[in-house]
Image (tube, rainbow, N blue to C red; front, side):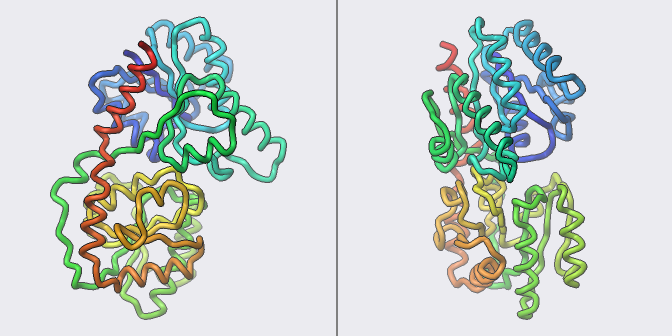
Length: 367
C-alpha cells in the first residue's frame, strides 16, 4: 500500500512533527510526503531519511497539479491524504480528485483542527469567508473518508458542513520516549517554573501568559517562565517582556529538539491557546513528563484535561483568571495526585495506536 501525504509546508508545527513520527515508524504502509508551498525543517529531515519526499513549492498552480497527479500514476499511489486545511490546499485537493477520478485512488481529508475562523484564514472579508467554506465543502464532498483529531474537531465540522461520508476520530499520539524515565517531582518545594512549548503566533495566547506571569511577579511570587518555539509574534513578545521589566523571569529559547529535558526542568505547563484547539499534542507530552497542565477551555483540550483531576482548566480567555489558576496550582495541596493522574491519563495517546488506527482505515478503504 502506498500513501501520499500532502502538506502545505514542512516546518516544525504540530501536524508536521506528528506525521514525521508516523511515516518514520509506520512499517505496514509505504508513506510518501509531498510539500506544496513551503519546505522547512521537517521536509529537510525527511529528505535525509528513507521516506520518499518531494516539493512543488516553485511550480505554478497548474504545474503542481500536473506533477502530483503524474507522480501518483507513475508510483501507483493507493491513497492521497490532505493534511492542511487552507483555501489553496483544498483547491489542489479538489482538482486532483477530478484529474484522477477514473483511477482507484482513494482520497482522505485529515482534519487537524476544529473549524475555527482563526484556523482557516477567515476574517472580515465576507467573500473570502464564503469561498473558504465553499472549497472546504467541496473537499469534503470529493473525499472517501474524513479523519478528525478529536470529538470537538468532529463536532465543529458537522456543525458547519454537510457530511455525507464516513469518518472517525483518531487522537494524535506521542512517541514512547515521553513515557520513559519520568522524573519523580518534589511536590514540597515551590512550583514556580512554568513552560510553554508551541508556535508563537497570536492565537496561541502567549501574550496572555506573559501578562499573567507579570501579575504573579508583582505579588512577589517566585515565578520563572520559559517560552519554547518560534513564530511571527516572537519579537513582539520579547519586547513585551522587556517593556514590563520582567526579562529576568522570562526567557525565550526558540525552537529546540531537547523538549523532554526542558519539560523535566519545569513544573507547570501552560498552553494559553485562545482558539478552538483541535487537540493539543504538546499538552499531552508535558503531562506524560509529569508537568501540571493549565489551559483555557477550548476545543479538544477539555477532552485531555479534567479540571482538578489531571490538570486545570481556565474558563475565560484572559490573563487575570489565568494568573489566578496558576497561583492556585502552585499552592494546590494535592499536586502529587494531579501529577500521577496526568501521567496515567495520557498513556492512551500513543503514536503506535495512532499508526494502527490510520493503517486500519487505509486497508479498509482500498479493499
